[in-house]
Length: 265
Image (cartoon, rainbow, N blue to C red; front, side):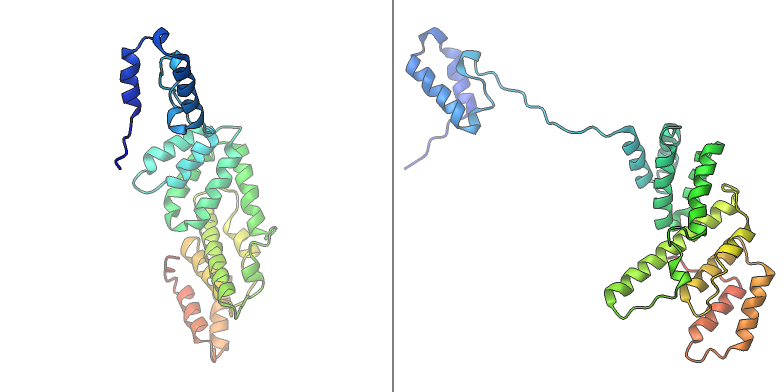
């Protein structure tokens, strides 16, 4: 048995040839019943309205301006920096600059290999005392470990659990990213801290058996340089320890003293 399929166009053609006052009431009720009970007919009005096609509109929540700006931040690359950075800068104002700075911190800390791009954007965004103070306060909280963000150098952390090991490595990468961005902010005079402030508050957790501490030392020496006091500490430690079973730390300390560039992370 074959199945006959009637399209809406078929009924439209009939509609154009039939006068409404000639249609039997029973047929009208049948048509109305079809429209009410079958979804495929619901996009057409009832017969008395000439079966005009209904217009349906999608409902959506429009993005706020701030969400659009944050979207630009998320998409910035070397290729589109000039275009998107201008959009971010032009749309940052006294009402939203805290949100934009927070988001820029978050992104730049996690993607510090693009530090040059982000530092340029910081320069363009930090244009008055209010913005500078806000950024200073946020960075100072990290340097002073107010939110336990330096916990990996405060306490040397180990784990025999693979999942915890992966989590710790992720935290190490993020910490190195934060310090790299902070040091570049200092180097470019975007925030009001000097090298001595970093030496006094980050290097005070001396632990030459902690790989992340040594890596931070190397990053510091690469970007702003270590002072003679800290270089002398490293030389003395190198000369007075045999590094039995810890040769990795010996080579790392040598790299720091020789100011070899740290690999991307």
